[in-house]
Image 1 (cartoon, helix red, strand yellow):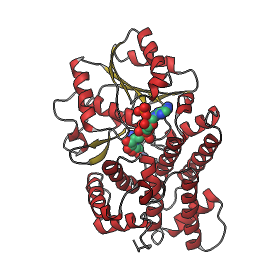
Image 2: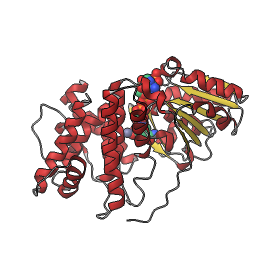
Image 3: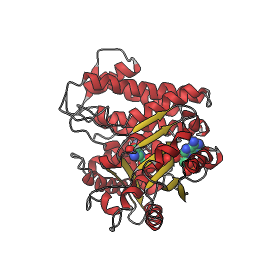
Image 4: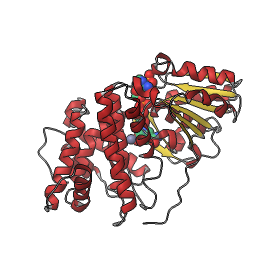
Length: 395
Ligand code: NZQ
Ligand code: ZN
């Protein structure tokens, strides 16, 4: 157990019929509100109507910034920043999934500075005092509703970079699981994969050999991600299943699992973000291809850790650590396939000849994120493990 400070300032209001609280929870920070939303789902399922009514009842003046697309792009962030500055917005309200919330965070940060917002993502500028943010979450996946991270794609440089600062935590997030009942099964599965990835990034990169508290918490979150996703697959309008998946995804990346682990990293995300930047694949779909490959690249490096994961999450039995490690990875990959999340680059229509360019792009993010131990060759080897046509090269 390493020293740690755990402080998560985001207030969570969880449950059905909670959306009407967004108005008063937002106008406490000011009446000129920039309302950020996606490309249509929140309009269609009535969530945006409820949010508008609540903001109006709280006497907010609302300026709308719709059209955030999945894998949000810098050009749309910049137009949101211009709108926030033009109307002197005092607070931002995001209604949507991780893409909408992340873009809203970037707008909060960029609306109060004169320099370009991308400078935050390349480490050239640090966050000072971003606008306050409130959110209504509509998709269980990223954890952005309760964390300090944001991920934006610079279309000109084809870089999808993540950046975090504790001042970016939403002040309040409304989590009403019924809003996710309209999420199609593919994005439901991608969200569960993303939550599993957030846990595995820490589970397999901590250097501390003795973390029993965090291990059980993380193993439980992986199990809950799979079990609640399975229940949603069986009954998409199962409120309790949607509630379990929503809270699991939030807990998977709100800082709790990492407390006490010491230094951890995001090597799987480092690689996946290049897939999303180049091919605009859904984040979770990219991860279900990268995760098994990255885990296989770890087989000879941490067989005991992989064997513990196999025993505790999939109840694999046996004494042979190498066999257990292999079986655990295979069982996770089988679950990805069972919920129709891709497990090979081919399924994302990504040709093997692009692997070198993808690796170079991922390496650039690895440098910004200070992820040690990865070079061009190693990332290419991991990507070849994800390429169904390659034999299993050594990593
Ligand atoms: O734009 P709309 O119409 O809302 O459609 C969205 C989008 O097409 C749709 N959707 C969202 N809520 C819905 C719904 N459809 C029906 N009913 C609803 N209730 O789902 C699609 C995907 O939405 P998106 O927000 O892109 O998904 P997600 O929540 O998985 O967010 C993905 C983004 O989060 C970033 C990823 O990089 C990616 O850009 N991440 C953010 C992190 C963070 N801030 O900590 C960490 C994550 O690792 C991740 O990198
Ligand atoms: Zn993620």
